[in-house]
Length: 371
Image (cartoon, rainbow, N blue to C red):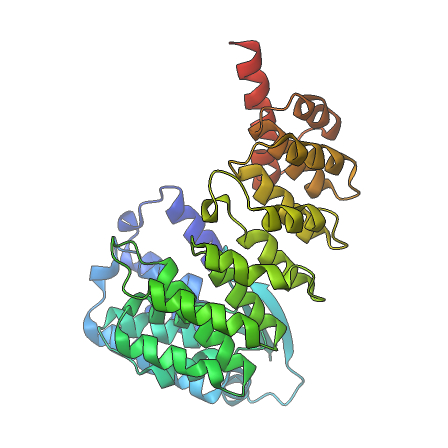
């Protein structure tokens, strides 16, 4: 079916790629031509990766580079000879990332060749320069969650070396907000993905993001910076988040609501953070309200004032806000979660978020009835 997302789901749930016969699989060149990073990566699953000689990987790299540098539309026209209008549609390529799908002359190709090129270079042990990787990502800066952007930022963050850190940090003062956004994301992920006892960049990251948050004017970049601040357990991060709690852009307010943590002032939220969260619980944006409610839910602060605020959110017009309130009341050991969960009914089919929220109420009731 040339469906990478299905192939990845099969692998995720136990399909043994090693049992596939070579003639039953697409060639790597066909995987590249599809433009789907999900499909190409499935063809290189760890069980069958050894089947491909380095020469075939090199051919796949060169083919991906040709598609990427030419552009999908130009390459499609060259291959089909068609002068018709190209149909371009955004599609989900895997669980997290999107690509654009181009159709011309009966041929359909996705524009994930930059991600495919990045992936195969990594397999070959090629260290592509920061500048070249940045250019690949910026070619899709106007597309939300494009897989090429994600592939580049994750790869760069995984390097965790001073040269990459310095190059990303230098983008903070770049006049192009897309470049500032890429720099902020690489810096944030470098800190987030560090699982060592000593994070060499933690201190400088907190200092940089604190200063950056006070001067950034682009809302998308500011949101990324505030998300980064929220991933630091430090009172300075909270202090930098507070001025943006009333920002005009909902994305920024969501980042603030997400970023507050009782860990920055244990065992309870600070007075300022609590005031901001209670205000965000009544925000005009439903996602902001849900995020603030979730932050209160998972916090260790068990003040009855917070439980009452979550109980008030049971009457919210948005179902997910109501569910987050049920979740919070359950985690706070509040009886009001039981009746609220009953009134909301079963989770919508396929919604893991709804299932997790309602499961907390069911677990509360189970333990209540079995002391």
